[in-house]
Image (cartoon, rainbow, N blue to C red; front, side, top):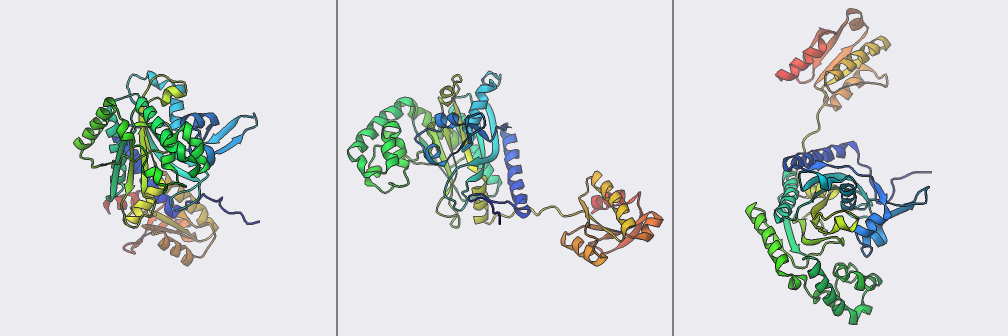
Amino acid sequence: MNFKVPRGTQDILPAETWKWQQVEQIIREVCDVYRYKEIRTPIFEQTELFQRTVGDTTDIVQKEMYTFTDRGDRSLTLRPEGTASVVRSFIENKMFGYPDQPVKLYYSGPMFRYERQQAGRYRQFVQFGVEAIGSNDPAIDAEVIGLAMDVYKRAGLSKLKLVINSLGDTACRSAHKTALIEHFTPHIDEFCSDCKTRLDKNPLRILDCKVDSNNPLIASAPSLSNYLNEESVAYFEAVKGYLEDAGIEFEVDANLVRGLDYYNHTAFEIMSTSEGFGAITTLCGGGRYNGLVEEIGGPTAPGIGFAMSIERLLLAMEAEGVSFEVAPTLDVYVVTLGERAKRAGAKVLSALRTNGLRADMDYTDRRMKAQMKSADRLEANHVIVIGDEEVDEDVVMLRNMATRQQEKISTAEVVQKILQADKEG
């Protein structure tokens, strides 16, 4: 039987993982500057957590979750997104009692959704996300958005568009929901079965329907912006002001609707405007979720966050022609001739690595010429050659691969000799 990688997943091979590591390093550095600390949550949670937070009318809960029953007859789900797990941990570990609020957290790891695979979208994908929980200040909204923009800019992207909108508070959403129900009810039979289900529970989801996106009733639906109260308008104006003060360009899109039920007030997306990026331009999305902590049993603790796909970030970098740093070369390759030399070479190899030098040797008993070819392919800076004669004299032959000069060095001194040469060169 020929085994293959499961549909919707991928193997990330060493030539590509180096790129991932560079992006992950950028993320860590930006989060450190903004004083966001890493949190690591389980890959699976109780199914009800996602049903209550993400929303049982969303495509994620209805169609895309990987849910299973464990040996204790408990329903568990591989996490489809990160916010629910972070909020659950915030409550369970009583982070609301920390003296410094808001609590600023970030995460990075695999998520799972049963989606149709396409460029930059997989059934197992990696998300980086940020959550700031415990403040209702519009300034923190701008900070979170700024952090996301900084990650992209540090990664070398310049063709970006930030789109923002206000979803209003609970009162605004309720009035808008009533208007949407009245708008769609007379013609709901024209819509798909999912939209019919969403009509009473969450008609806002109809506006985000992929099946009926061209239905004229969606274009003519009541706009949420017409139902914003004074408090919501003032909050949104403050967010825009802080963004302007930070020099962050944005566009207001009254039709922007986030795909998860827990969002209110600020919602935003960051898109790639690069011509070679593809039809799906969204790189990152997020927003404010006041009330989510209370929804799953916690105290009043407003929050805001975002999630971005690492796969799509890498695609955007490729589309803009961003170059990555070259992977570190090998410091030393040890060539050995014979069993005695191999034992001596292994000892030298251990000493090299102990001193922080990237070193390797042959493990297939190839001839010297083949081993030297490996050293060239691996772009080794130095080669150490050991044969029976070198073993008897307790020396090694050290070759500088750039100058092709070589000299005999005592085994005890070779490590310091290489360290000194690298320091000078």
